[in-house]
Length: 467
Image (tube, rainbow, N blue to C red; front, side, top):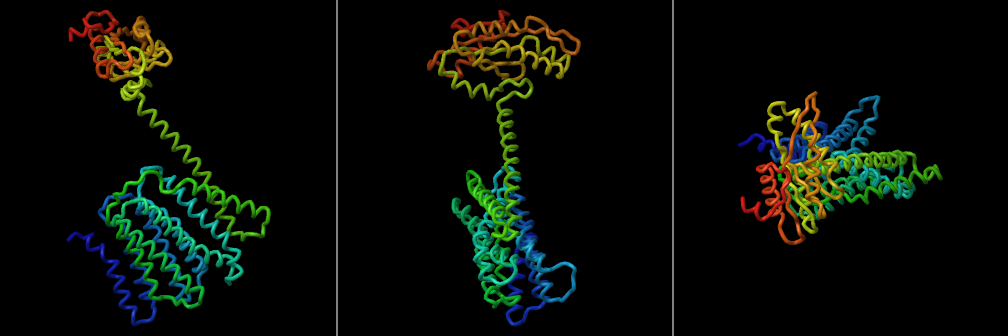
């Protein structure tokens, strides 16, 4: 049996063992500090043992979320079992870890549900904006009535609101994303994990507010069970197909507008909202501007990639793909197809080197471009072969002009290099001939020009008869 298969069930065995040991005993640091949190760490480790190929960022996100939660649990356990005088407030550490759990878990779970090959920065920023912004907005609406009915400091009231809101945001996000996919085993496990975590957390908050919660309650195993379910989901392939992004950009816009509104109200009425709400609201706005910059950069990169996909890298002319793509539209009107093949280029390229050959091709492309009329297309088809789509009735005259651009030598590295070109032309009449026949005729005419050294030849039935 493979080692990783044995390791896969360790967390579940540990959870069962903990449950058996705790049924007839009281909470203890050996069980509730060591074993309890060790189970969470084993579930975390299981994520990276799975041999299923998957998105590493999704694994990292879920693993970091479990790690943050475990750090909070350890801090809370130490504070409960040991009266250790520390300079750092363990309750504050625990609360910070639990708060950070939510945006990190949301990021990891959304990547686990569906991984898109897009900017990871955009993915992370979207998650942070939506999680932070929506949670802040909901907390802002609830904090006033909550402060009137819940005892404690303003920060404790905020946490009381934040936790259930965070639970609901994660559960709704998971259900929403999975609802537009097929119900795979991974999705089932993720739904069960998110539901178990939310139910356990809400039950814990209910008991805490009613004063009935006791540290180390058996209901706490729901958190561990949810982490095991999350880890188990990564042992199943993610083969869902989903187009588009996980979150609608409108949701991020709502988060931005809501946070801006909170800041505006805070400026007009400084005492209306607690000051701690201003920080996440401001952070949401800052992240939104950062996202805008990332989106502009991504759009620029995509545009550059699209240009490169239809551009010859050496000469800057259109490439064969662009030439063939535009051919279909070209067939709808009158015009000429030109095929150009350089005469004498290969000996220069072989004797002078590829660097000289590349410089020569770039200069040839520049000269050809100057002779091409507006609305026409010039492309490098490969090697020393070029193609042109000339609209209208001047194809033959354009071919003569193209050849004339090579009538004087090129100056490269102190050398004068002279070349000629053979050009074949075939006429297009709308709807008469398909693209492959037009290209074949232009190619035949080009070879006839090369054979007879006439420079430019228009296809005719006599030319076609020779091939």
